[in-house]
Picture (spheres, helix red, strand yellow):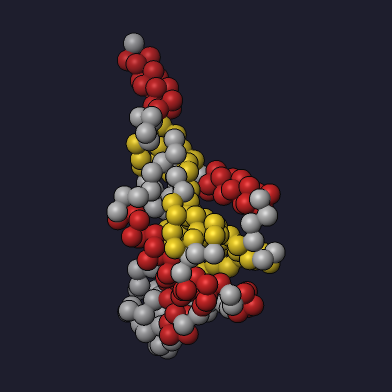
Length: 209
């Protein structure tokens, strides 16, 4: 009888608990990109944020519990709505959020106009100022990443970097920190973070379902 009750509990939890991986999130974003392409939108891009091993659990509007499988992924998609506005939509392991309208300000216009620079820039790996063979051996390294996809006036490309490579304050000074943080890609990412953080803190992201 006890085994039957345990089995019933597991089946019930399986129904109530949704677990989605990176492939699920990527499929949602791909659908959005396909929609924007079919609309012949000339300017859209996304940033995927994740820290390996970080798991998040949410209660969805319908009462269902959803958790990320292994790692939580959040993707922010921006697309041009008018000369002065973007739409911003968030996607994660548990689904999509309602789009928000944000300003297409001078920071975006300036940074996104430098397409060839964005395409050519490469974030250099962390380089420690010391002579040890394994400079990060005694350091706690948090593996967090940013991945970008751009579609700008028909030019499509992808970029990515490990946030650790931007680190300024650590056990050993990062000799590439100043260079990395001066890149247009990183400046764009910082501007995205300012906007996203503001809306996250204000609770402006609402799930669609």
